Image (cartoon, rainbow, N blue to C red; front, top):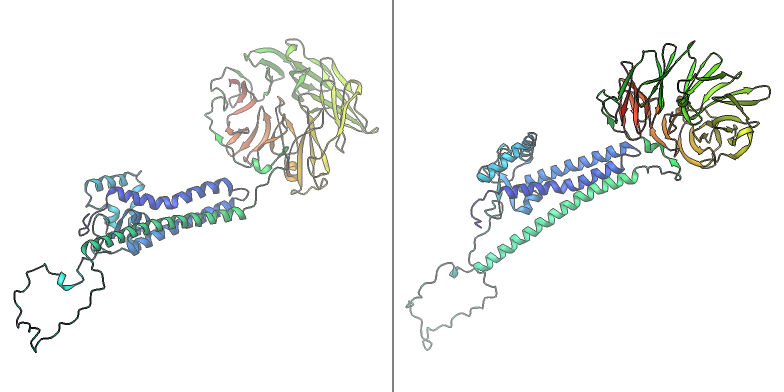
Length: 605
């Protein structure tokens, strides 16, 4: 090492110093960003944004500290650890804030070019160590290696002997002294003065070099200590801000028990799936078959058949082949039509005047079965089968019927109960107080039970619907309140046992906005109050309003709705734009859609 000449810093030391300075702030800032994103944006996003701003200010303060260190000593923590120093090119003195920010701004501009400029700077420095890069030329500075060369701010002192007689090289002593020294017997003789022995240790050149080495070694340890202190300060400051924000952040609500679904857990935006206009999202883009209908056609689909009411004709297609199985002429316009099941087989129901008609797959080309609708009976689509009901106001008693191949069959409704849904020969009825009764043929009681409150002994607020072996009820601390902010709990129960399956707390406002519960045609999903529910578990799976979607209907495992994207199909995993098509059926095997060009098309999974 030559400490008498200036030595330019190598590319390795420059890069390592930059990296150390970056890591001191990037490590705690990166960890804090992960923590903030994971824990501080819920339930109040404002807490997360404020904490992010605080971390950003700390990072800015760190850059100011680096600039101050450069302005005072020409060294940051990284430069001190690597033994390099940035000084003004002419005076070899530390620069100021303007120099530091001129270099930093120039380097940042270079990064905008995909990092090409810094790479060129690195290669040039390796080939021409004496030539400074443009950031240092813009700041009129140079980077010196003060361990391999001279440190202009700390010039090592040269060694000078402590005693004058040691300054010159040894020479022969005098051969004679004039005047001569008087002999001891002479009267002129004088005793020589007594010289005290030297008490101070003599400093040799080797001693001086050893002291200089110790001083440099102490400087290295001091640099390491300052680096560690800076790192601990950055980590401690950011950690203090983040943990203080976490302590002040309201805790996310937790489910009351294993049955509860928190509305806040459904508020996260779902990913949006692209749509190329072909097929249906998640299915093949090539149609297996197509069938044209008129713009006025009313179309339904089950897993076995497609039904098209078009120009007073019911066309029934096979979903497997797309071919017509039969055509049924209609004498008049259809007033009511709905998908349903007959004896477990999917089919279609329609009415003209006071006559009900039905068709199922086993009917084939035979005439649809029909019967006269009982006086006052109204169809009630609750679940997979249609229930017809009427009320005798004089007796305050309900009547109920199911429609089969043999016509309308009356079912016995327990006194004081309201018919809710039918499954085969079993009728599920309820009271306004929340009592449930399941009866079989001729009104024989199968089971009876009161619905239990899902939590905190809430008052009963009414039955929403029964169907698909499920009962849906409302509970609220203020059951008679109509205020929008009134808390209301939606609870799903197993219809045969009354066991609670799941519940979610919402508001009266949502229930008033979407008061009708819609059961999916295949019985797997239901939609109510802007939520999509899984019928088997009773759990709410999607908050359609949180996805900025206006609910329309339930199709397969998802819901059809409208949003700013146009028509969308929402499942528990994604939102799919489906502008141009209307889904009629979507299950694990296929999708049946009606296109904007009035074509019925089938797409395989």
